[in-house]
Image 1 (cartoon, rainbow, N blue to C red):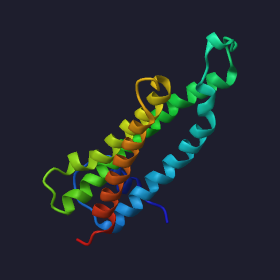
Image 2 (image 1 turned 30 degrees about the vertical axis):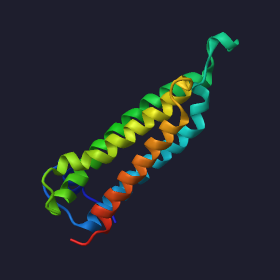
Image 3 (image 1 turned 180 degrees about the horizontal axis):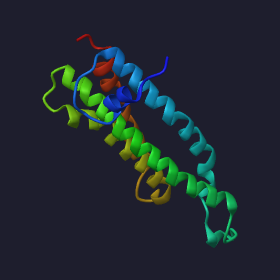
Image 4 (image 1 turned 135 degrees about the vertical axis):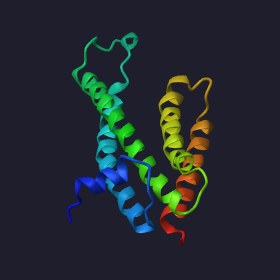
Length: 157
């Protein structure tokens, strides 16, 4: 079943309007399907970003360059998906009668971006940032994601 461009524009490019539970689930699933392959590729390429000239690594390593070019593309995709998710979720929060639908819709992407930053930062500053910070951030993300999925996708209107 193809979806027309006007429907995509309504769901992902504006926060105005409201949608039902099934539409939110389908829309969020589509965004997850878009980001999943990018995430898997990043998991394969991320070890190549660990490049330290003081350890005797060569100055130019082609896979390191590929990994850093990819991370720029991946970051752009993450931001586009995050904005699309906020627009989609704001419609659902509005349909449920919440007072600040855009703020609530932005909570999960904000926490996810912070958790991503914590995961990136902790190995680089492990002497001052213990692994418990990462686990705590992960726990907050799981809680926010579970609440969001319940509120927008499972809770009856």
